[in-house]
Amino acid sequence: MLSSLLVLALAAGPVSVQFEGPLKQGLTTIAERGGLNLIVVGDLTEPAQIHLTDVTAEEALETVAKVYQLEVTKQGKLYVLRRGAVLAAPVPPVAPAPLVAPVPPVAPVPLAAPVSPIAPTDVNKTIAELEAGQERIDALIEQANEKTEALTDEAERRAELEREQAEKVKELAVAKAEELKAGGRSHGQVISTGGPVVVAAGESVKDAVAYGGPITIERGARVKGDAVAFGGDVVLKDGAIVEGDAVSFGGRVVREGTAIIKGEEVSFGGSGIASSMAAHAVKASKAAELDTNEEKSGGLSLAAFLVQFVVFFVFGFLLMVFAPQRMKGLESAVRAQPVLSGAVGLLALVLTLPITVFLLVTLIGIPVAALLWLSLAFVIPMGLAAIANTVGTSMPLGKMRRTQAMVLALGLLALMIVSHVPVLGPLVMSMAICVSLGAVLRTRLGATPKGLPVMESPERLGV
Image (cartoon, rainbow, N blue to C red):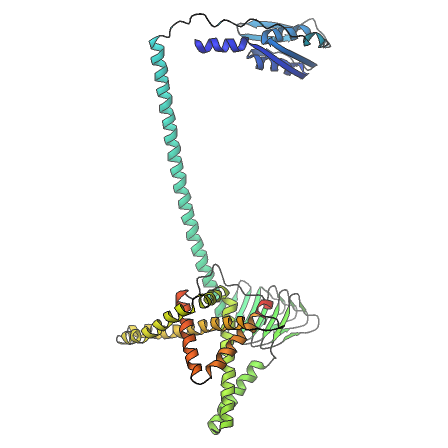
């Protein structure tokens, strides 16, 4: 009952309306301000200007209805407004000047009248309703918590599925990368590890890479990426197109007629540098077998030095191309803590001999021992390449352009020259081997890269 009295008091209170627009909307505004129940019949679209201050909603409604000659019907708390039946056309609104004067407000309903006491049954009913509402709220909260837990479980399940899918994709990608390294055609890539690569006439491939042979791109063939040959020429026949870079390490890039290279054309060494070096080494070896004089022995040493340099350089360069992140991790380990890496490598070498003896005792351990030494034969040159790259980076080059190939070549040359110094050379190389092995073991092969290996740009590598 108290709430009903408050509503009546608020409804009887004065309102202020400042409105300009359609008449129907003005009437609706008055009803909303005064809390009246109003039904408007008809369009009532004529313009109206209503400016009222401190008047009751009933007075405002009746005054506006009178000015615009509307019929007002009141049924209880409901007001119904409609246009009078005698009007055949809209009546122009009366000037709003008379409505500007404030209408004295109606005296508010006195609230001092004694209120009848609330019966205990009403109190109990209210308490019961509150308790029921609280139970409904608790039930809603519990439902929300259950839905939240269900959504959390679903999100975790989806995240686990996405992780599993990502692992599968990664495994497939690594397998595909190994397949591409082994040679063959896959997804438009042509890679050969021991012979020439030929892109047939009219064929379109993504990349063409040859290790130890030339690349020939026939007439009308297209390479959408790069064409890279290690130890051979890159030959573009008339009308052939390479949209990326054409790079030859140990050979030349040859273009015939209207062949097009949209990227860079880079050559490192002459067309027969690899074959001539190998032939020179074989020739020197045969000469040493026939005649062991000092001059020919010196030629053999020079040839062996050059062959050793080329082998280590190609190995290190391939690591820079296909595992750049791993090599950077090894270089960081070498520069940051060389003493710790050397100690770890020395300990590993010391433990290798007793482990090998232990494995050779049983037939099952023999393949493991062989695999152990094969792993050492791979990881030690890998670490030495990182050390050579670190040494080459610290060497001054003057105005020469510092490329990855140049840095690696200088570092390897410095290590190989030092290794031939009596007494000091073997000591330095032993320390380098320990540091390289320790860096490889400490960084787990230079840390695991994210994604597939990415070939460095030819300008960065300097091939």
